Image 1 (spheres, rainbow, N blue to C red):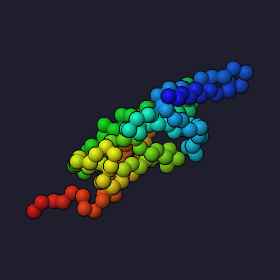
Image 2: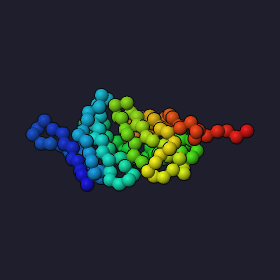
Image 3: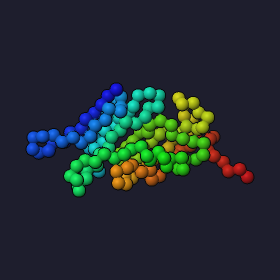
Image 4: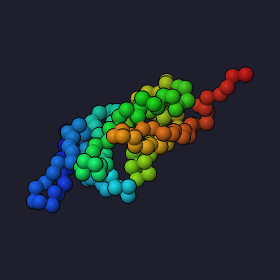
Length: 149
């Protein structure tokens, strides 16, 4: 496994803890986004290739970095995808553009082999949570759901 601990200088010689995680197996160096957020891309171990990303947003009221919850957006996903399609693994976030991309799995696919195309996800931040605002799918043509006449 791997871990990361983020500190900020306080200006008084003492570092202030921003956040930490030991959930991932790989973490990239922290990035400061154009929107002023701190993003740490990360992945967990296993065939699920899940996300261990961290995201922090500055809060003027508390004068501190606040962590943004990055998991609950998945609850809205089934209602925004065509029936029979899903995102089974981690996504490739892009917090510069507040989005992500992922392959699409069909219900009959094996875990290894998504055959349904690709989804582009758009997010917003509400409170301290990442919220799924839109999904644009590019489905492999032969699997596009068809209306039965």
